[in-house]
Amino acid sequence: MHALASNQALTLADVWVPSPRRLEGVSLALVPGEVAGVVGPSGAGKSSLLEVAAGILTPSRGSALVCGVPVGSRPATHLVGYAGRRTAYPAALTVRETLTCLARLHGGPRQTAMVERALELTGAGTLADVRAGRLAVADRRRIALTQAVLGGRRVVVLDELLSGLDPVARRDLRHPLGRIAAEGVAVLIAATDPSALEGLVARVFVLREGRIVRAGTLSGLLRDRILEVILDRPPAEPPPGFRITASGVETPLTGRTPEAALALCRAHRLAVRATRVRLKSLEEVVLDAHDGAR
Image (cartoon, rainbow, N blue to C red; front, side, top):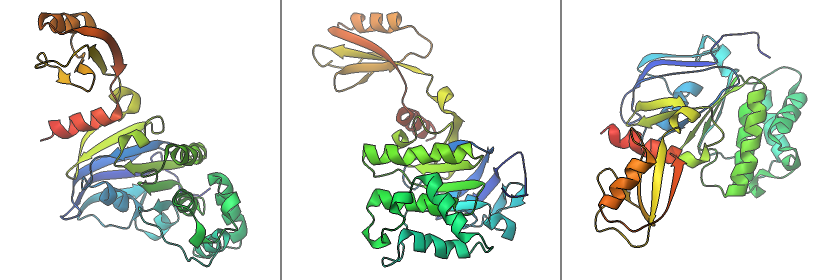
């Protein structure tokens, strides 16, 4: 554990980055042990935000602090771990050899213990003696995560770590993130696909064109209800406030009851077969925030 301490693990305050890596007045804060997500379409500024948090990209305005010290300073380099979208390792070296080389950058006499602890934390021990050139995509992601936590970091920044993986590989890679957070490490993870973060993150920041357009706890963002109406035949046009789906129509229940929404369907002579009330998905939250910011 590092001696530096702060009640905030990571703080970005009014951060600006000029085009083409644009960020416009981004502010956020993470506490130790928190897992938070950054979501938004390609080009929204997710990678730029993470690179500022990791000290790779210097903002033109604003401040970035990790455990109370400026990101990019010498003390901060030992506090923040980063896994980018593209990782490359020497193909001829084993995973353990690669991590040992990286551990030397941290200095100190306990490099072997540092590597073994990181392998244990991320569940990558079975890959330790595999040559990096033979790693599958999901295994390379796990090693990228192992690299990011190497050396007892207090903040870990992960860019699209879970994207493009099959459901089993994605599930297996999510498990270590809970263990990492339980160690008091703050995790900030970006994803273009919001479904990758559901059930994983406690808070979400929705980015569009370099700005945070919506933010909140995952439970708070997903509390809105949707009424799905399955129809015997497609509607000529949906009732006001409804949209057509593959099986019928649906509408948010903001400000009205399911009974009132169904009465509107009947008034439009829709052949209702079944109904279901569900919670809004994170993908729908992102789309609503994106459309509302236009």
